[in-house]
Amino acid sequence: MLTTRFLIQGALLLTALLSSPNNVVEAADKPNKPGRKQRKVDAREKAVKFANMKAAGQDQVSMTKEAAELRSYELRKKKKKGLLKRREASLAQVLFPGASPEQYSANEPVPAFVDLVESKKTQLPFEFYDLPTCPEPAEKIQKRFHRQRHRRNLGSRLMGHNAKEAPYSFPAKVQKDCTPLCVVHVGSKNLRWLRKLIDRQYRVHLSLDQLPVLMLSKELNYAIRGYPVGFKAPASYTGLEEDAFYLYNHLKFTITYREEPSEFEGLRVTGFDVHPVSITHKFGDEKVDLETNLEAANKKDGWSTCTAGESPVNEPDTYLALRSGATGESMKILYSYEVNWVENDIPWADRWDVYLVGSPDDEIHYFAIVNSLMIVVFLTGAVATIMIRTLKKDIAGYNEMQTLEEAQEETGWKLVHGDVFRPPQSHPLLLSVLVGTGAQIGSAFFITLLASMLRMLNPIKKGQALTAVIILYVLCGGVGGYISSRLYKFCDAKSWKRCTIATAIAFPGLIVSMFMVLNVFLTIVGAATAVSFLTIILVFFLWACVSTPLVFVGSYFGYRADKVEVPTKTNQIARFVPEVPYYAAPPTSIFIAGLLPFGSVCIELFFIMSALWLHQLYYIMGFLMAV
Image 1 (cartoon, one colour):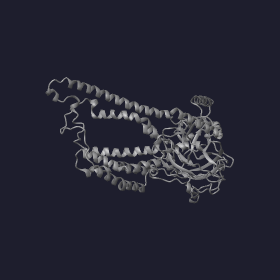
Image 2 (image 1 turned 180 degrees about the vertical axis):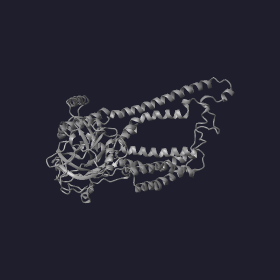
Image 3 (image 1 turned 90 degrees about the horizontal axis):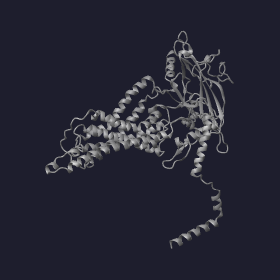
Image 4 (image 1 turned 135 degrees about the vertical axis):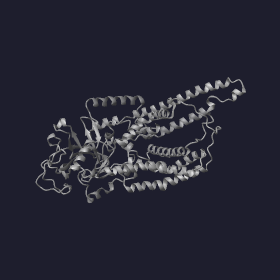
């Protein structure tokens, strides 16, 4: 019967296929997915092709079609998304899910913003307009970019990010020769500060259409974000008695764009790079007002080194040295720039490829996961081996006991079974507060990682990620209060009010105290990360009005819950612990016990710290969750 039913179903299916020839044609026209063997052959051919391109000296940072193909091949493993089934995607989809491109018509101003002036050698960023440079554009100019202005969240305020409109203008497809921007008088104090910024390798960061500016070098095949304030020449090069400092006062911007009338209207920005130039401009006889926008005032004449059709270049004879006059008078500096618009065929979705050139590959993160697993297996095996040997020896001794008196005498591992679950007699309050605070922090970070993996949170936007961590920590106050109260009740302690208050204020109070002390020094040196009084009041209200009440609510339910029951009977009096060797003493054992877990996460910790302090991109939260 079963065979007859299968035959009937097969005949009906064959009849349906024969009666609908369109389906057969569509199935025949549909391209077959290449098999595994064919995919290996294609991958081998691509590897040979791009290896030959690299051997021929093809760079990966220029905005040419060949460089874009080579970048796409090198980053092929990063251009995948999905938790289980990894599918092909662009870096724009991976880094900025849901982002859509902006189209600009000819002569339409493209928004440009300046961010922090930062250095890898120090953690004191400054705002761009704190430097002796051109002033911020007037309000009537800023209204054009009102739609594109960056919104500041709590995390951005704490990190000091405050994007302001750049003094440069970038109308779409408008080529600009050397354009004078403003003249600034720099006194001796600001000259010393500029030399210090150059010596500490500070870089200026600005963005166009949300695309950070890059310094590219085809010869050296590198791309780095931002451009330096200036450069330092050693005394052996200049022949002077001390090092000389030179300022970059002319910027050559190159903006690449793509036009495809069949797909979209206008143009899309696909690249933004800069080439800084240090040049001593020659002033004319015409008097110029200081710190005014010369471009807006249409004052372009009077400088023989910055005229139409001319493009300043870096020449040792014309470098702009940061030196005051012979009698100590201030130095007069002319800032200028030029813009070159170049059309190419690079898609908008691939414009982020150049920013990840040279970044570590995913194999390093796989190595971190394997390293963590190996450490876990090693620790599990070591502990299991020690326990098996100890228990085997003790059980053999129990079996050899002949008399009842010998059997009643506890030896070996039975000596500690009554002390394992005995509540601590000293500092139960400190233990409960630490465990409750750790549970609160752990819950907040676990939810943050989960939200990042599910694309509910974008870790590339650091201000947004920090805001999410702070909000989640505040909302997890109930978890900390519940855990600390349950543990405090297990310890048979009575000062439950003190435990609840300590859980609510201990860790936040410590962090805020350190933050306030650092903020005083940041304010004194004028750093951009100095937080305003209004932001401090906002954080205080988050703690006082949200976190603390949630801690009290969690503690209320924790104290109402039943006391934690232990599986064995505990001794009322602690057993005497004999002296242990130095390598088993608490300081040494704590160090060894913490060294192995740190070794399992140190690789991912390196990438996270690089993203925080070295302006790199970190977005693979799945690896971090696995580690």
